[in-house]
Length: 113
Image (cartoon, rainbow, N blue to C red; front, side, top):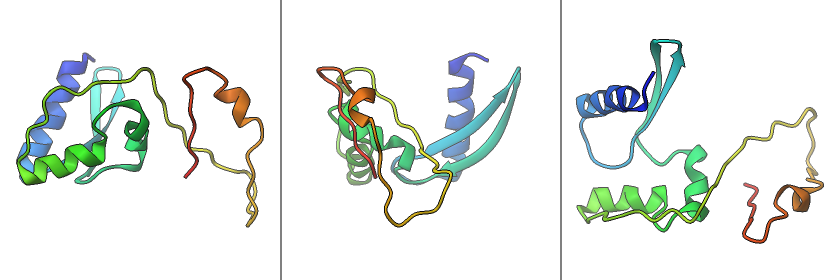
């Protein structure tokens, strides 16, 4: 399913809700079928990557929308990604090994929240 079709579905959902700010819309695409999952009327944890990937983070964009400030062009710094790490065990002393190997590039960075 083309991106513009999915964006139009998300736009219709958000406009029907009304309000100001950043809305995260989650859709599942199964072939030609789109299944609505959820709307987050706030910055979403999966968007934390915008803190390091562009000049205006999702948090800054949310505040600008509420205050009626212009957004202008958003400058992306380069490729970025976020991932959820689900541990197999429960621990009060969690450690992460080999992070330096995962982000070994000159312009690479990592944050663990």
